[in-house]
Amino acid sequence: MPELPEVETIRRDLQGEVVGRKVKEVAVKNGRSVRRHSSAKQFRSLVEGRVIKSIGRAGKNLLLGLDNGDTLVVHLGMSGQLFRAKNANEPKVVHTHVIITFTQGGELRFVDPRTFGELFVSHPAEDGTELPELAKLGFDPLEDVISWPDLARKLASRHTTLKTLLMDQEFVAGIGNIYADEILFAAGLRYDRGSDSLSSQEVRRLSRAMVETLTEAVKRRGSSLADSQYRDLFGEVGDYQGQHQVYDREGQPCRRCRNRIVRVKASSRSTFFCEHCQT
DNA sequence: CGATCTACCTGATGGC
DNA sequence: TGCCATCAGGTAGATC
Image 1 (cartoon, rainbow, N blue to C red):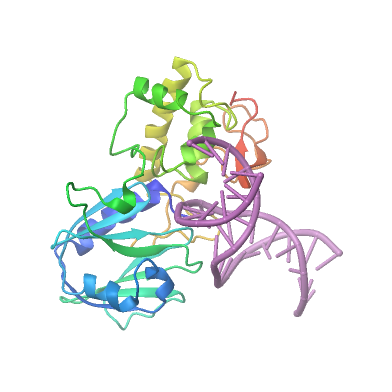
Image 2 (image 1 turned 180 degrees about the horizontal axis):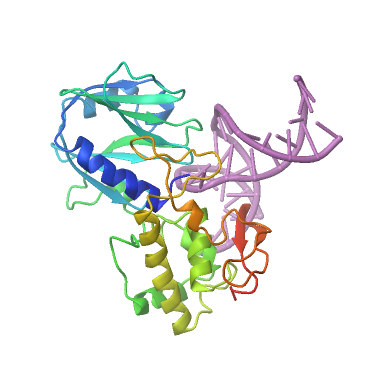
């Protein structure tokens, strides 16, 4: 579900809600959500008593900086949600797998029907600040602005399709199935163009489209699809879905040229595009 | 090595 | 109504 704009929206919500708070207790209701750890007990011991000092993001990962230098990493997978609760009396929705209670009151709840998401505590590497589990992530399109000549070099070094590359977290971190299609439409490029086939003008368009599409989606607090599964920290839906140009618009007229939006399967994922506007 | 498939889950939807 | 197939924002690991 959540891609960079949704995760960034939750990051900003968390900034105002949990920074400076001390963890009193962690309750793990479903051990699968902390599967990187040997046990739920071990995970709890790494989080309980810690103060949350900062909230960062790397691609689709939320990074909760703890006061001992560790980082609590949250990945929402396909269906993960984080909710703020005022107290334990607030009714729990089904699939509430982890509950973090703060000493000053209030809870942070991790809800995840499909259980593809996870939480884990990461220790920084000996020599640097980098987290070993995230070392292979590519650049972040909003945090690390990359020059278009650099992007051109990176694109040319790979032999695959544009969409595959945009969704490859080791190439660029944070783009998933929705925003890959939206970025490619904004850039006027087909999903199946070879990544090493772009003119310099096309690379510039792609570079701009990436930053502009994601920035605008963050402004509108992300995309909630028909099932409204994506919600922010306060349970509110996003507002960017109405701006989608191609995603989930099969058969509907292209907002630019009025031709019907086409849907195809590419590497077993739905891909939406306009055959007229994207070449 | 890199590209592609499969498994991991629950729930919503649509055809018959 | 119900039953079954298909689909869904992601990604690690197997397989080719």
